[in-house]
Image (tube, rainbow, N blue to C red):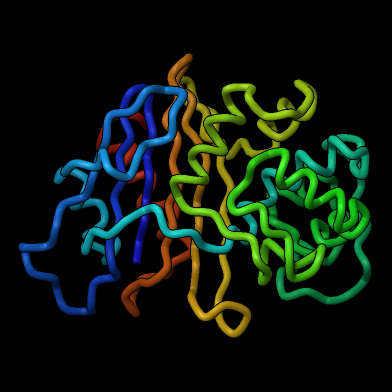
Amino acid sequence: MLRSCLLGLGLVALACGHAAPPAAQSAGAPPASAVDAQPTTAPPASAVRALPELVKEFEAEGATDVERCQRAFIPVSTFKIPNSMIALETGVVEGPDTIMKWDHKQYWVDAWNQDLKFRDAFRVSCVPCYQAIARQVGDKVEQEWVTKLDYGNHDTSGGVDRFWLWGGLRISPLGQIDFLRRFDGNKLPISERTADIVRDIMTLDVTEKYVLRAKTGSTAPPQEPLELGWFVGWLELGERRVFFATLLDGHRSDVDPLPARRRVTERVLKDRGLM
């Protein structure tokens, strides 16, 4: 299933669908959805209406049966956004160039097998780096901050260095968007310095037209029964913001979910003339 939520000033677009089978789906697939919303509010589930023009972008990635974006899932590495805030606010990490020491264990991602600056640990999504940060922060303080940031269901059960990977923490695509809007709107209880650093390390692309800030996240069996692929963030167009939360939790056998999560998001943004 591919779930995507795109938020702009005054418009929320929700496009959610089951993964299509290898054969082409029928033309009767239900439409994607959209809802008008004020820039400072999350979209109410009751306000969803049809936005058929988004369907073709999801058909291109093999996901067309529309469902809901309210169901909560484990955030996996998208939690590195709030966890970076926690690391900086608690002083466990001093700044973007703080060195995260490699523990000399061999990990499946080659980029993790070295000392990394904090900014680079975020960008290569270094799981052991952020697990080490969480252990330094500690159970009680992690719980306090997850609650203070009002992130997802606030559940940090399952271990201080695992709760966002295989534990109790859950957040929906709409919850991701709400959190990102509060972050960009300076409505989180964090310092301006912390906000600036996290915005900077989230930056994926800068052009004359826009700035793209985002974070991926993924998991797969056996740790989780579902194969999940998140891509959450926002597009800056001057003073305008377009927030998105894409979640792939099923796909055709010929679709690689990791590039698809970002690719389908950018397809929709480009189709709407935003990129």
